[in-house]
Image 1 (cartoon, helix red, strand yellow):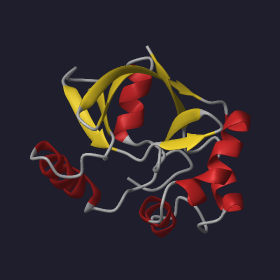
Image 2 (tube, rainbow, N blue to C red):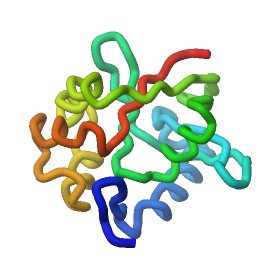
Image 3 (cartoon, rainbow, N blue to C red):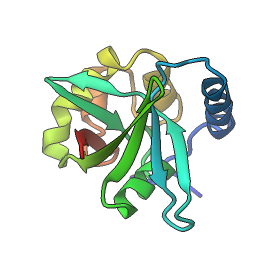
Length: 151
């Protein structure tokens, strides 16, 4: 599928790498790695995705690193109802997708707060032009930003 303003191709190795990370976590490694659990939009089966959670201005947020990402499409189909597993504790959460104008401050902070790997991966895939606050802010409306609220 060609890249459009609403989709982007993640690196081919991303899904296999996520599976490896989930196996490592299952056997006791990477306890800090947050894992989002959302029912599949077609199968209804729980889908697990390791993601970066960022704390910003008293809230916790997830970023759809690739427009059209499966986990974000599943969240939208589930009307924001999901679970988040952190340090072995699973919590029921509601993910609220911010409107583009409200997402900009979170996006501007993303390169500083999210570490280096995710932002660089987004740049390398052509989702953003550079790993800068301005480049991330420009992704507002293309990459969903989700606030994590307790249920």
